[in-house]
Structures are given as C-alpha cells and as structure tokens.
Amino acid sequence: MSYVDEVLKRVKEKNASEPEFLQAAEEVLESLKPVIDANEEKFRKEALLERLVEPDRQIKFRVPWVDDKGQVQVNTGYRVQYNNAIGPYKGGLRLHPSVNIGIIKFLGFEQIFKNSLTGLPIGGGKGGSDFDPKGKSDREVMAFCQSFMTELCKYIGADVDVPAGDIGTGAREIGYMFGQYKKIKGTYEGVLTGKGLSYGGSLARTEATGYGLVYITEELLKDHDMDIKDKTVVVSGAGNVAIYAIQKAQQLGAKVVTCSDSTGWIYDPEGIDVELLKEVKEVKRARLTEYAAARKSAEYHEKKNGEHGVWNIKCDIALPCATQNELDLDDAKELVKNGVLAVCEGANMPTTLDATKYLQDNGVLFICGKASNAGGVATSALEMSQNSERLSWTFEEVDGKLQQIMKNIYHNISDAAKRYDMEGNYVAGANIAGFEKVADAMLAQGVC
Ligand code: NDP
Ligand code: 2IT
Image (cartoon, rainbow, N blue to C red; front, side, top):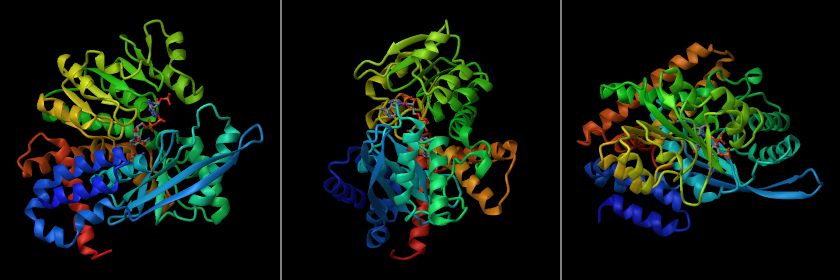
C-alpha cells in the first residue's frame, strides 16, 4: 500500500466520527500523491504525513455565561492549534450551533495550506463554539465572548496564536473578546485580527475575503482569455464573505443575481442591491425576507429540505460563500447543464468531493477555498504587520497588496499543477503549493 493510502486508512480509523475532517484530509492527501510518491521513503521515515494530520494540540473548554433572564447557560469552546511550522497559529473562531471538534479540525487542517499559500508567515489553527449568536441581545453576546476569552486567553498571544472572525464572529464579537483579553493580560497587543479601526484593525480587512475571491476569479478568467465584466454571477450566503464578493463583482461590471441565508434565498434579476443587503444583514441582523420586502425586482424563496436554490439559476460564475457542503452533486449537474464557466469557493469546503470531481470532469474552472478565500487571512497577516510596527496603512495600500497576493496565489497553484502534469487542476495545485513550504519547514526543524 502506498504511504498516502496507509496514512489515509489510519486517519479514517482514528477519526471515524468526524466526517468533515475526513473529507478535508482525503482531498488534501489524495492530491499530494504525486509529490509524496516521488519522496516516499524519506517522508515515510520522517512520518511527515502522520505529523501533518495530527494537530499540535486541541483545547476544549467550558463556557458558562448568564442570559438576560438570569439563567446560566453553558457552551463548549474549542481551539485547535494545528501546525506552526511557518508562523504563529492563525485562523478564525466560528460561533454556530453546528460546531464540534470535527468541524474545527477540518477548518484548522485547511488553514495550514491556505495560510502557506498567502506567502506570509502564519501557521494553521481554528476555534469556536456551539454558541448561537442569533436572537441574542448585545449583552448576552458580550457575556459569552468575555467568558470564552477568559479561558482562551491562556493559550493565545500575538506571537503564539492569533484568532479572527468566521461564521457568527464579526467586528462586535472580536471587540468584546479583545477587551477581555486586554483586561486579563494587561497588554495591548495584536492578539486578534478583524479588530475595529479605532483599536488596531486594518482598513480593507472587512472586505478582504470577498474582494480577494473576486480578484482571483478575475485572474483565472483572464488566464483563459475571458473577462468578469458582463458575466452573470450567482452567490450563496449573505454574510461577510458574500456581501463583499457581490460588491467587488459588481464594481468590475458583473451582474450578481442571487444571495442566500440559512432560511431562504433571493433571486434578483436586476442585480443584488448591495447597500440594501448590508442594511438588512449588517445593521438590522434580519432575514432576507426584509430584503425582498424592500425590493420590487427580488423574489424570495423559502429554503426547502435538501435543495440549495441558488445553483438552479443560470449563470456564468458561481461563488459559494455560505458554509461547508452547500453545493452537492445535483447542484453541480444543474450548474453544468446551465453552462457555468467557473466555480470559485468563498466558503471553506462548500463543494462536496463528488461535485468537485463532476465540475472538473466537465471542464468547469474550479478553485478551492484554501486558495480562493485566502484573501481574508492574508489581510489578517497584514493587520498583524501593522500592529507590530504600530502603524496603519491606507485602504489603497492594503487593497493593492491583497490584489497582488491573490494574483500570486493563482499563478503559484497553476504552476504547481503544471509541474505535476495536472494543468488546470487548481485543487491539486493549491494542495501541492501549500504543502511544499510547510513540509520544507517541518523537515528543517527536526522531529517536533
Ligand atoms: P457570516 O456569519 O458572516 O455569514 C454566513 C452566511 O452563510 C450567512 O448568511 C448564513 O445565514 C449563511 N448560512 C447558510 N447556511 C448556513 C449554515 N448551515 N451554517 C452557517 N451559515 C449558514 O460568515 P462569513 O461570511 O464570515 O463566512 C462564510 C464562509 O466563508 C464560511 O465557510 C467561512 O469559514 C468562510 N471564510 C470566512 C472568512 C472571513 O474572513 N470571514 C475567510 C475565509 C473563509 P444566516 O444569515 O441566516 O446566518
Ligand atoms: O477561514 C478563514 O480563513 C478565516 N475565517 C479567516 C481567518 C483569519 O485569521 O483571518
């Protein structure tokens, strides 16, 4: 049995109750086969893959807090510090009722390769809690965040591990967590990214993931003699990534006709009104029914079981920006039937493995999240640089660096795929290019 198959078999036996982690591990290890096969003896002796799939440590803790009725609530908090071969652990905090250790591990594992692809010195980690911020008062969210940070602060630091936002964690939550860290530790340091602009945040971090996604999509199309201008785009999600992907795609002349949230989706043939969407989601924290109520051209569709809505709309480009496994094989078939040219992932692992294969087999240009959504964490690393030098760069400066980083990522993953005779396979290219730097650093640092 090959070294990769051997390790995959063991990973499956050891982590049978963690389907999302297994999915991520399978995708990465399978596509590393040509690289590993070429160095099999050395990598096996060094147990490189065994060390890569096992996190440095997993921290799990109780998060007690008091709700507005005076009732004590208890959630579970997690931080998985996966790999710090190339820099301090870096990755977001997800607050969603579906969070469990398998989900945090899949996200942390992906983060290792994504962070490597940015070209910046950041290792991989992820955390979060099964806390649901939806429907909670600001005071309840603050109580949760303070309790969460009271424990988490023991394990993080500007040179150790630097968390940030993810699903359910935005500027409000980061602010409460930063305040609590500062109060307990007594130091003012860049321990979190995605901070507000008045206390060390970076301009363009809010926009970075969505903008970066569109920049890499543009570069992909350009490389295939196409242009994003006048293309019809479908987007899923209506959160941080989706909103700024819609905004940038529209600025570049595309027409974005959908968005979605956890309860329903919008089809707006005249193009999504991004200012209205921001008002509904960022200011009111309301459902998309409010968008439809305020906009004549918009149709609202309630989400039905097993149906993902937006992928049935005819488009040139699809940008999944909500959550994992939201685009399955049926959706991929529908997209191909409707002539989709490119699918680029804004979310982490939104496309199932069989859907990915179907899209690739049918000639659709496909970039996986660890490359295409890396603009967020890359800009977080730029926030860390600004904090270290105690300076703030202009929006144009940060946005310019982001554009260059996304272009570099595209060309690096494209070149890596070509080097292993898999031209156009950007999934393999991303995994290989991300892996090479981490593997080199791990081998140089000895057995640790
Ligand atoms: P937000 O919480 O801002 O938005 C998530 C959006 O997805 C919401 O509109 C939410 O609906 C919708 N959604 C639909 N179904 C689900 C579900 N089952 N679970 C959770 N959300 C659902 O998160 P982000 O925009 O920050 O993140 C979106 C994706 O992008 C995630 O996969 C995240 O890991 C990834 N990502 C985020 C980065 C960042 O910088 N924020 C960077 C790189 C990747 P509703 O409004 O009803 O909650
Ligand atoms: O998935 C991701 O890359 C993020 N949620 C952003 C992480 C970060 O540290 O900015």
